[in-house]
Length: 409
Length: 219
Image 1: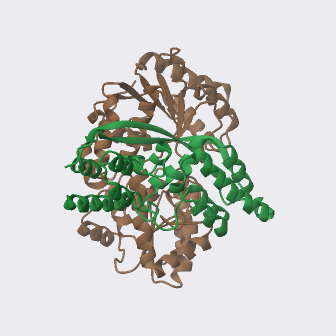
Image 2: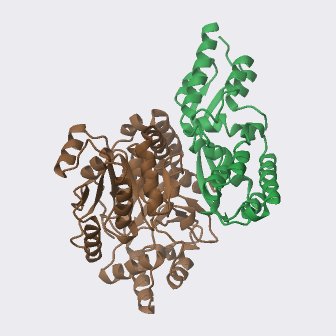
Image 3: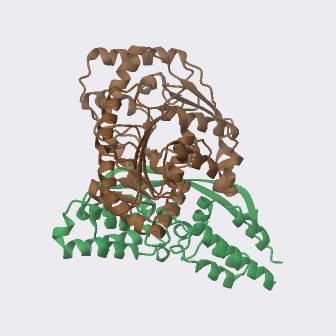
């Protein structure tokens, strides 16, 4: 077992200004019957990755509500994480031939962790496939176990899923980010959206001066429309398609395109894609390809806030939380109807969904021609995120789940 | 000052969304789904969705209508589904019956469209309600106003929208109490006439508070 260190501790009352005091009062009311009840969250990494980021914010908020909550991280060596990384990709649908040895390694580390982790809380929440086999430690009728799956299981590798399903089917329930990502299971399945933290550096309000400095640093003209896609340089994010859509828009509007993503230095495939993107961009001075440092939340925040339109032209997507980030900043978003994006973009209400390069270009031209509609989509998008995709809503879903389990509903 | 014998107890409800194993890829499959899905699924896609999408006050009524519009591009059917007003229903059975009738009529009239694949599937989900008392109650109009002001969106939705099914009356918890316990029938009627389709939960609450303030000035 590894220790977790919660690095973010934002008091619950700080959220009242954004979501209203009534919502905070409601969280306290929902938590009251759960005070002192023990809850154990388990995942496989303490730092890096979306799950650790969410737990880092969720656990302190639950503690503030007097839940007896702890977050433990399972331990494993390189061979375990090699196997689970392959499982992860295979569950996403990538070709993979799992060997009996892979399954043995997976089971051996789970067995080892069963002896080191407490696993005696009233409610045990297991995150993702890595610790899924810890369910073997459960004594019949002793406590509640639920499995939170953060990945898309719509087209999994059959052998890996059949192996995991035996464990998952023994939980009291499973939570998925989208109905599309779930499987036919004999246990109840619940919808648990991923969430953004409106007070994190990536989403908090920024001074206009900082936004202008960021634009100046990257030589982006604040006076002309800015079309932005924030995502890593990955073919599934279709950055080349974004450039092609931009070129169509450029025939009608004097606009700029910003493609910003993490540095590709340590990612061989990312470097290849980045070269393809640079080749496609050619010498167009209005296309800015930005390799941001690995952790540059304030810059991402500033670029999103400075954008006229935010694009997410993915060919495949998980939930795509960058969409929620942009919507929270009241930006009109044009995005592909894939993965979890249609959950965030209700077409013509909170943004515009597209299915092609040409469609993406058309919708951007439409929004540039109708700024009043763009503003309205942004406003509605902000409300949609406030109602469904904030960390406080996620906390509320967990409280409802815990209440339901403890009441035996 | 009127003091009610029975207090109004403010409650909040949190809803978990349960994913059912049912989906529809065509209008014909939507009809089959509507016929066979659980009552909590019909509730989720009509009553509950109005709460989670309350900020959309133009052209959003329920999940079925929205899917028909965006995934099958059938404006005519979407319009008919959107026109079903949940305030007219005190039972899920009656609402389900009308939803089925509208889709069935369309599919019978245009069988070729009924079988056409939608751009994306419709996933039937269910609402699991978990409610808790807020520890706040009211016996007077003043106390009621204060409680209303502090209510969360979910609490407001619970008392104002989903209450119709609980009460099995064409009214809501607020109006029911104002009329029955404080004898304020005119105020209760005015509150019940606030349009939940063209107001957000916040603007509906503001209108309600204004009506209460007007009533207090009369006293």
